Every structure is written in structure tokens, then in C-alpha cells.
Amino acid sequence: MVAMIRIPPRLLYLAIALVLFLHYLAGRHHDEYNRVTSVSHLMSKIYPSPLIESNSNADSPIKRPSSLRYNYPNDQPYSDKRANATFVILCRNDQLWDIVRTVREVEDRFNRIYHYPYVFLNEVPFSDNFKSHIATVVSSKVEFGLIPREHWYQPDWIDEKRASQARDRMQSENIVYGGSLSYRNMCRFNSGFFFRHPLMQKYKWYWRIEPSVNFHCDILFDPFRYMEDNNKTYAFTISMVEYEATIPSLWPHIRAFIDENPQYIAPDNSMGFISDYGTGERYNLCHFWSNFEIADLDFWRGEAYMKFFEYLDSKGGFYYERWGDAPVHSIAAALFAPRESIQFFDEIGYEHPPYTHCPKEGDNYERGRCSCDPANNFDREGISCLNKFIRFNYPYTHKLG
Ligand SMILES: Nc1nc2c(ncn2[C@@H]2O[C@H](COP(=O)(O)OP(=O)(O)OP(=O)(O)O)[C@@H](O)[C@H]2O)c(=O)[nH]1
Ligand SMILES: [Mg+2]
Image (cartoon, rainbow, N blue to C red; front, side, top):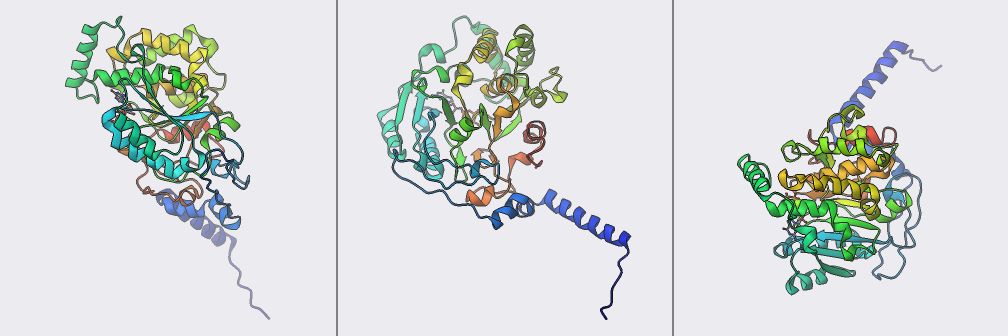
């Protein structure tokens, strides 16, 4: 006869509670544990996903066996055609080697398979040396554009005395780029003009790249196609809080714009992400870090954003303060685009020094053969707004980091 050991139910519940508590603690403090015990990771061990097939011919279709088990971009099948999309890079001639290294990474991690074109923009002509080195590293068409004067330089109607006093004061207060006029030109250009450049007209989608940024993981899917197929408008990898001193009057102007133009506000907008409790009373300074952006050019070219930009531009804050294109773009995306059309790409490992987003959902890290340190992930920093975004925009499908 087999002897039966009777465990009191209370002891059993206690043991289960202890195991769950330890699991919770380990998941909270160890990214690695979190990843290997996640449901999607365990599922991927049961059903390993097929790898992307590389194809060096720009005109041939890209083959990728389909797998629709999970709702992550890396699992989307992209087998037929490319989107109408381009990389866009604003850059100076003296940044040649920083951008060559970055473009080489973009190629190695993604574009050697997809061959999307590049548009380089500059307020002065690119040198022949610059152009020839870029042509060496890209695997696709590349165009170099000159920015029209009126899209770049401080407009005549700006009161230069007031603008220079603002620059001097911000410099004395050690505000980053507070004393720089060229930085202000750049922010205004990125806010309101890059999508109007003649070379950009033929495209619907863009991916913004900057010199010295790093792509740490293989990108096993086509983000442009993902955006198109899933009705997305704007995608980001890093989100953080803005320096308040650079935008003191931005939010009051935006509130005035909203009051005058309520018809542009998307019914299901992301006010809850940029204003705590969604009241719209205060801007919580959260924005998408726009040095990385994948987005729909038609969103910027549309009536809502054009009116919004013209309104803000007329207030002079790009010069009398130091408004960045990041809060301007982000607030517009949050207000004028439906919230489900804003995409966070966990699978794109991205670094703009000093901050890195290192993939952490499911098995994104392993599949991307990432080179970033998971322990050094900006998403966990106090000034990151990612958790706020996830809590607001993905309440059910994404776990909090
Ligand atoms: N052509 C041109 N490009 C510029 C100029 N200033 C900045 N850029 C580009 O605009 C983008 C943003 O400028 P950054 O200096 O990187 O600004 P940031 O990312 O806020 O600050 P960093 O921490 O210095 O990277 C980069 O792609 C730069 O190459 C300029 O005066 N002329
Ligand atoms: Mg930069």
C-alpha cells in the first residue's frame, strides 16, 4: 500500500504564494530572468520562428516565411514589396565619419536586405568627399539636397534683439544649446520643413537617422510596412522628459491653439500620455526622442499639423525660447493622431549617446542578436516616459518594464 502524505491546504497556499512572490521579485529586478520566463519566450522555444532570408538584389522581393503566432512586429511576414519610404539624414559636412559609421550599422542591421533609399539634407552643399564616402557604404539610391534658405535661417520678422538676449540668458544659465542659433534653426527646420523639401515629396514614410547613433540589433522586419499595414502614424524607441527651461511658453500656446481649433483633436488622442490624468492643464514634459522617428510624412503635411506649426512658428518660440522639434512633434502626434496609431518599437535596439533603448520584450534581444547591455536600458530611468506611454497606450497587450 502506498503511504499518502496529507499536506494541509493552508500550507499549500502559502507555498504557492511564496513561489509567486519570488517569481515576481526575480522578474522585477532581473531583466534576464524576466525575458527567459516570459510567455512569448517560452512559446518561441516550443515553436521556433523561421529566420529572415537575406537577399542582396535591390529589385528582388524579400522572402520571409510567414508566422503570425504573436502580435510583435518581428513576427510579421513581409514577403512582397517595399513601402514608399526613405531614410532622412540632416547633417553637416564635418560629421562625415560619424554618419558613415551610423549608416554602415543601418545597412548591416537592416538595409542590406531592404535597400531603402536615403535623403541627405544640409543648409550648405555636401562636399564631393562627403558624397563619395556615403555612396561607398550605402546599398541603395542616395540623394543629397540643399535646404532652401527660407526653410533654415531665422526669419526677418523675428526680433533679433529679443532673440539674442534669450540666447545670452540661456547660455549663462547653462541650458543645453541655450546659446546656439544654429541649433534653433535645426529644431525649427525639423519641426516644420524637412517634410516639405523637394526630395522628400515623392515619399510617404521616413526614418530619421542622426550621426553617431547606433543600431544594436538585427531588424528582422520592415518597420515601414509594419506602419503601413497596421495604420500607424508615428513610431519611437525612446521617450523622456524635456528640459522645462527650453519651452516655458509652449504649452500655453498649444492650449490656445486647441481652444481655437478643436476640430483637429483626434477623438481617441494621447492627452493622457502628455498631461497627467489627461486634463490638459499642464504638460508633463513627456515626449518621443525625435532623433529616432519613423513616421508618415502625410501627417506633417496635413492640415492639422501645418496649421499647428504655423501657429507656433508665429509665436517666435523657436528663437525667443529654444523649442525642440521633439516636444513639437510629440505633442502633435499625441493630439492629432489616434492613440493606437503611435507605435513603440521595442525590437529596435537604439542608442543616441548617452541613452540606449535595449529590447526587452519576449525574445527580441536574442532574435535581434543585440549588442547592447540589457542592464543599461534607459527605459528604466526615472526620466524615461516609456512606462507612462505603455500604461496609457498599451494597457492590455504590454507588460510594464
Ligand atoms: N546641416 C546641419 N545639420 C545640423 C546642424 N546642427 C545640427 N544638425 C543635425 O541635426 C541633427 C540634430 O542635431 P544634434 O546636434 O545631434 O542635436 P541633439 O541630438 O539634440 O544633441 P546631441 O546630444 O549633440 O546629439 C543631427 O542630425 C545633426 O547632424 C547644422 O547646423 N547644419
Ligand atoms: Mg543628436
